[in-house]
Every structure is written in C-alpha cells, then in structure tokens.
Length: 231
Image (cartoon, rainbow, N blue to C red; front, side, top):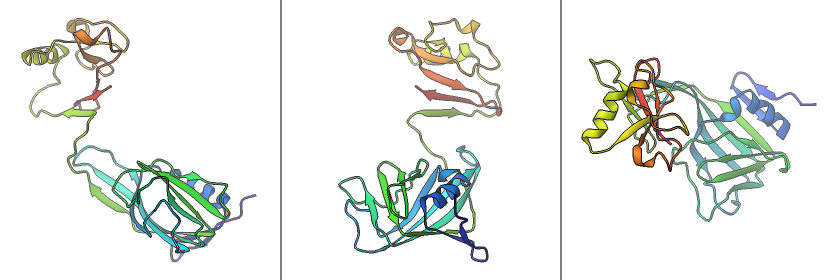
C-alpha cells in the first residue's frame, strides 16, 4: 500500500520518505525524462560527502521540439535531500551540471529511505532519509541554432521540395556517385522513387551499398522540409 504523499499546496512542495512514494510521483511526471540538472550542492564526487544535506535544481523538457526558433516549455524543480547516505558519481572525477539531458530517473530500492539514480554521460546516485520536491515556475525558451553530428535539415525559401533525381545530380557535381535504396536493399533508379514524399528512403554511395545496409535516411515532415539522418 502506497502512503499518500505529504503535500504543502501553498508552497507547492511535497515530502517523500519512501521509494514507493517517489515512484508514484515519478510515474505522474514521466520519470523526469529529458531533464537537465542546473545546479548541484555539494558537487557529486566519487566518495560520499561529509554533508548530510544536498540540493539539486533541475528542469524537465515537457513540450516543444528541437527546431531552431521553436518554443520549448520546461518544468522546474528543486530537490532537497536530508539524511544523505549516498551522494555519488560512478567515476574517478567530480561532476557538475554540464547542460546535458538525462534519461529517466530510476528508483534504487536498495537504499534505506529514498533512493534514485540519473544517467547523463555518467551515472549519479542519491540515497537519503527524506526528499523534498518543490515545483517552481515553468520556463519557456526559444531553441537556438545548433549543430548535430548525425542530423541535417535543409530549408530553401521559394522553391519546391527537390526531386530524388536532383539530389543524385547535386552529389554528382561533387564527384560523389550516390543512389537511392530501401533499408538492406539494392540501388534504385531515381525515377522510381516517389517524388512527393520519399521519407524512409536512403541515399548511399554506390560503392558502399554492398557493404552497408542503410545510408542517409530521409524524412520529410509536414512543413515539407527535407531532413537527413546519418545511419
């Protein structure tokens, strides 16, 4: 039986003393997937700190997309841990927030009291007697232009979606011979590829088709903008 969470509605805070309570709260908040830790006191270290208290300020991406110029909404929280028994990072170096996104938080039932882990580039561990969670005012921001090693989007004003043949021709001008193909498939003539929507088709260097199952994956969202993802 899950004990009801102790809430302070005026302050928008809850107090959690068991892993069952934390699990219930996380289930109602998408397990804080896509969260960013903004501040941690004390910093996470390979060894437990001397302090019996800890604080994490974080935000969670809840709406919007990654397109530059689009709006995103974040829920913001402060976690205040008391009776800390573990405040660790599984690494040889200290860790401070670096802006990276976390996967879902995981419950650590082996902890006495309340315990959870979060994984960024490394895993952090928190075990404590009590966890107070305070909900702060939501934040809305605008996605800044960014670079990816894997995804490429192309926007050209004043023209229609390029045809599959045009892509083959443009690569040819750079002395790169490419062909369209389905996943695991052979090369296809550009004339056989759907002109209006070739989402799901791959562009691959012809010489690599026998040695690679995929290529540049094409995706055309409703805005009629071509997006390539390397695979």
